[in-house]
Length: 548
Image (cartoon, rainbow, N blue to C red; front, top):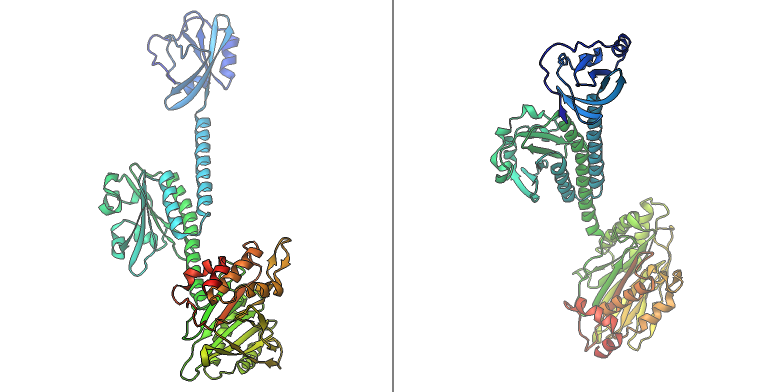
């Protein structure tokens, strides 16, 4: 960009300018410098040009450029000029001040860059509810667009604060520091308290502690500390450092970014809190780890319809023998519905059964008392189907099961020769009507024989070639008959695999299974190593039966 020459010398050119031309140039609002075509001397500076360049009062030659269009910088102003022939041996430079236009264009471009940055920040911050990932993303965005270094500080927890630090070209560092160190960083206590950010010019960067930034960062030119607004309380504080300074627009952009980052961090923290709470609640609703009482095998399987929830309406439970109750109690049920509401009722039913077991050991009486308890709870349209049984060891390694059912599919008995029998039990739904009818039955298992309790999600699983056909009881009977002689864990795993193949890996309803088996006299008890061998047995049933 050409600089206007400094003019010195004698007064304006003496050659006469036509009066009409002089009047016309003075009347125009455009800046015009009239020059002699012969020697380029200035012969006239109109009023607009005189206001724009008051120093043009000499008659030295003035040629701002070789082309007919030039761009000039004069006294901090941006000018463009166009040369036009005016006749009578003269030409004129028509000048226009583009300073405001350039400033507006620069401001527009800067605003577009800020808008693009905030849009990118919003997109990246909204992409995850993982607190650690949100912290790292905030630090990366801040260093890439706002400062040379960024430090995020989370609110105190047990007198400790989590710090996330990042410098340009460096790696993210995460550490926990004592709460007392907060006072060493100017403005940090106020930011964590939710007070408005202190302007950067009011903070003395020299007071920042040496440990705040890595040793290789160098001297801090300016420090900016701003709160990260959260949900009713600050989500933390953002410390920005530059080798240079922060302008008013930089500070405003940092505040807007901090508001968006704070909202994302607050949402991530709330999500983590809810996940932790849900995990604690789910832990008591998930199927228990089955005990292995002496003289019998137990194996269970549970698959929720909603995999992300992990719990649902189906359940099973086992209560080991005590001094007052020498029998092992088993239960498997299906609560009406799926999802959280069914899971809540499932927990209530399991806890009620656990309490009833202390005062009542007869399965049919437990079902009737449970029916009254659910009716008194006042939950309309909520009922449960249930199988409850007691297991007792008798002579010669045999087991006697006393079973009672309330509206639930009858348990299946797998004999050693492969026959599958239904236990002769029946009963009405539990929690549906005042008067319930329960018809219990006793079933004996010889060595190697098995009793399977299951929920209707097993037989109602839809899939197959059409994708809508139910697996059904006949397929369940046929599949169970092929498991004769297999350990309980292997039988349950094989059935689970067959149903999973039928529905092509998905599931439409909760599925629960509980198997009770009298160990064969020569059987390999799967205590400890059973889980490792279950898949091999399920995949190779013939070899498994031969080994058994």
